[in-house]
Image (cartoon, rainbow, N blue to C red; front, side, top):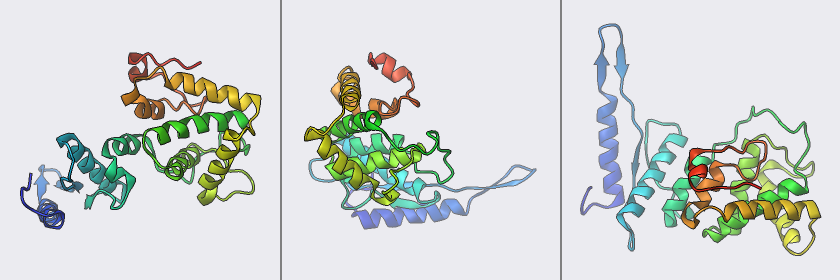
Length: 228
């Protein structure tokens, strides 16, 4: 909307708007309401469609909210989500930040072969959608931690994604149990029932990797998602 301006110049305008809104108060007669806002700013890049620009701006707004609300933010620089804004928005919508007080649902038991098989199927989907393998593994590690799944005993939470990649490499090299292969195949079959352009968002929405948290949303029913 700010034709001819650079990203830095646009951010300055957004910051001025933010400051002006912060000065606004609403007197209801019983109390006074202060106004706050989060603003996301993005720049049209070569090859962008209007939808790409809107998605990148949406990512900037998610960043503003995740960093504490009531501020101005741009999309993360030098990040895959700036290069693939549509996929990035799907991720931002369905990747809650890990909570330190999440109750461990599995009574201290780390993932077994079946769960890893399902995780690998989702990682393969993310890679097929354009993510690097390390980014895909980090995303799944974040989801696991956020869901209260404990890490293996000899693995630090910050390094779990590396362990997941090592296990995936072994899995693909043939070091897989029948149970792991069976669960991998079930998730792949479920993914294949979803139209290609909706697979990432629908798979994340339905938690296909976690049988305890799978939900039958209207979106999945609409697309005929079948979970074996």
